[in-house]
Length: 110
Length: 112
Image (tube, rainbow over all chains, first blue to last red):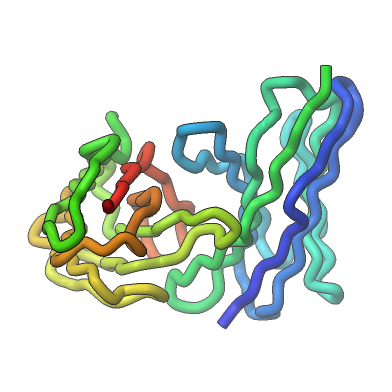
């Protein structure tokens, strides 16, 4: 099955850019997702990218996909304290089988 | 639309007790799923359903049962709770097999 790996922790200063990285193993993944989880809450879909795209931008969020290296990244521009959360990378491969990474905790320092 | 709702928000059980975690969605989504979230392990799929009357096992199905008698509801049953089932449980739904999943707020379960 698919494996999705992420670093556990990232700390940035308010106003800086954050880059959260993810690697996946299944080259047949059709969609790749980024979810945000705030403390005590469920997962909220932030953005997703289809496998035939290299980049997707949505306001402060930029997703980059390198299919050759099976590498996905999420860049948050002008990071704010409200961006502090856990960010999950997930991949969809096959019959609605979504595999999640363990999550990257983003800490934004004022 | 209320989206995906889960009840209860928090539950404490004793080992051996049974209970049902409720999940409902009002978006007429065909696909529904249950995940558990444990520290350092991300989300793991327990069971899923692609439509009323159809369910299948995920990655960690042991100790859990599900049923899907209606499109709206997808309850998760713990038959005989064990401390290893202490976790946060999330229900999700999607319009179809390759559509984006929408998550409920979660149920925090503590088994003593």
